Image (tube, rainbow, N blue to C red):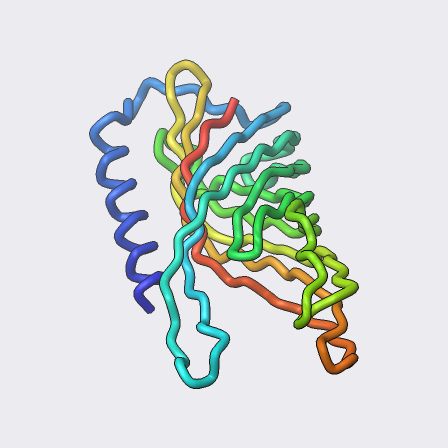
Length: 200
């Protein structure tokens, strides 16, 4: 609930600030053509304490960076492919994904929606063998990111985006514990994603 309130405040603030700089009648809108979108932002969520005698949740915030190259076919449809770096409690993950975007209006400041789906590749090293875990194998998993925000069109043709959404990333880990029991764990991180970007 706190993450949702933070997202709504972020989007309302972004919309208010953008009104101060927008040129209502002087802007360039590219309805078709190649585009590059580079974004940086934060992922907000919670991590549950793993110890049963101290069942508490801790709020966390990690950095997310991504870049997308694609083609805009129409105001309502742009499609491309992207990659980047997302940081989670276990380490860095590199997502490779399909990117779909849509501008709902052709205005200097337009509502903007997006959806990403793909596969996340873990970049962090596997833990060393110890008395609790050995023969550890790390694997990536399915990821998605869906959300909405605003897109600010300028007179130069460069656009700025401010978005908020829900991002999920699955990560797998297989290992043998000290009692020779084999485990196959799948963890799905769910985060509120807040991003600012520049589009050419």
